[in-house]
Length: 274
Image 1 (cartoon, rainbow, N blue to C red):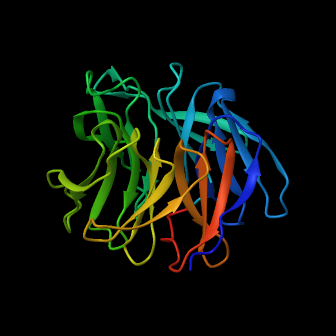
Image 2 (tube, helix red, strand yellow):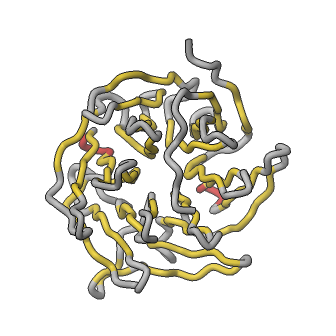
């Protein structure tokens, strides 16, 4: 029997991007106010930083700095926050502006994978997928996507996964031993609602996917089969993250109810770079 779903915090209007730091603080986004909020383990919450844009995804670097995917027109890329100061790391590719970054994840070597969907759609599939190397080199992994969204790396680091929201599918890109990427593959479909949004792996290789417009978190096996769901009171589920001392607490952001929910799961979440 699954552990009950409880409200961790509420009172927001545009929740996204949950991420835990090494001290157990939960960071999340309220994008309509351009705000990144920090909730401490004792339950207090306050604004940590305001980008002035449209922050969406968050990821911690091993050095403790916070990386932010921001879709705002003044940023439309990736920002690094250190000691209260923000620096735009990337907002263009080969001299052309990015669309606006949405989600991001680090691999074990500090390479940053991020989606770039802003204003892309089925009718206008101009979304991109990129990785940023520690030396500042930016590589375009894919383009022509209809709102690329959540990003996650498999536990064995042999593939990176991308939610393509408007086509209701999750894509898989193999990563070779030399780091080279293979052609995209269809991994799973998530029909209904708007489509898949933020994602996170557990240590067993199961992929937890926020179903935006679908009112649930869908759980996919390593083979791409849906093996479970976690119903959420609101339909606009945006993202998930694992936390707690044992990484078995799953937090879930939902826009419709303005709440972050939590539940306990059997397998620990994958330990992330930061």
